[in-house]
Image 1 (cartoon, rainbow, N blue to C red):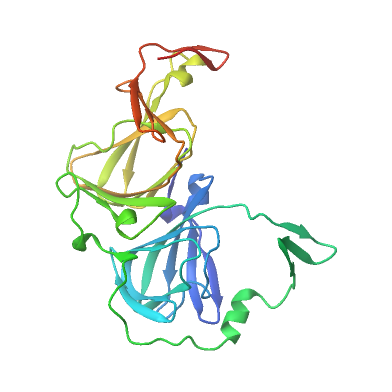
Image 2 (image 1 turned 135 degrees about the vertical axis):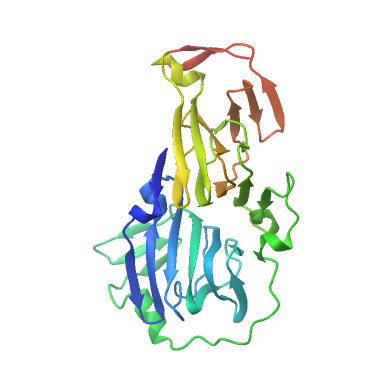
Amino acid sequence: MGIAHWDNVEPLSLRRGPMQLDRYDLGSAAGTKEVGVARLKLDPGGRSSPVHIELDEEEIFYVLAGSGLSWQDGKTYEVRAGDCIVHRVAWEEHTLIAGPDGIDVLAFGERTNATASYLPRAGVVRMGVTVEVTPEPHPWDREAAAGDLELPEPSPRPSNIVHPDELEGEHDGAVFDLGIAAGSERTGINRIALPPAEEGAPPHCHSLEEEIFVVLDGSGVLELWPTPGAFRLDPDVEKEVHRLRAGHVVSRPAATRIAHYFRAEDETFTYLAYGTRRNNDICYYPRSNKINFRGVGIIARLESLEYYDGEPKRGV
């Protein structure tokens, strides 16, 4: 687990042809493992990337500020602060174009290992087929050489772009499941606004699913609760308390055996909760001593649990 703040992350300047932006790798700063998040600050009229389509990674964008166009398969769609854009695997060609005042977005995505082998002496990559490797020009330079991108007038927005104002929130409007609403399949994202002194999800930890949290507004508290497995080495271990504010990024990799939960302080605490979806994930709740076998939809309460050399000896 790690905590970072976007004010303390150095940007990488990416300016090649139409791509004009600063990229802040928030995920690496916070210690994410199988997923990541980057903050992209696009110059006015700048593009976030070459037109592309991901073959094994689902991408989710959240607009923090500004406005622009989502370019998808030759059409354009207006986007603004609060919008969530989901790009499923192998679904549509896409890029993002900033408006006259620029645009500031968070880009969430999976980190996958391509099933490929690189043969440096032969200068090829094997991916089922053989792909020739050329050192130059850079792919972004090739995108620039392809000429201007045609930008037709904006069309009515498709289903993969949503805004909380268009949705019905859960828990008295405190939670908006933006990912599901925009069609995500492998990952998800919620926008959560906890009223003062309210708690989020109860303390829990996942066996397979990794989560990233980004604070958008207000102040709150993150608590980290050791699960029974954490006590086997240090029976005096206590929960950690971290105070958070806008710009903090919290990484919660899978299988840490440390549960987490959030609580608002004296003002509304708003954050994004992004995570993977794993069918065989197991979720443990130390406050109630319950375990959720999410793949089969069964919740059980643990009556006793002992550890021997780090492995459970007696269970439910």
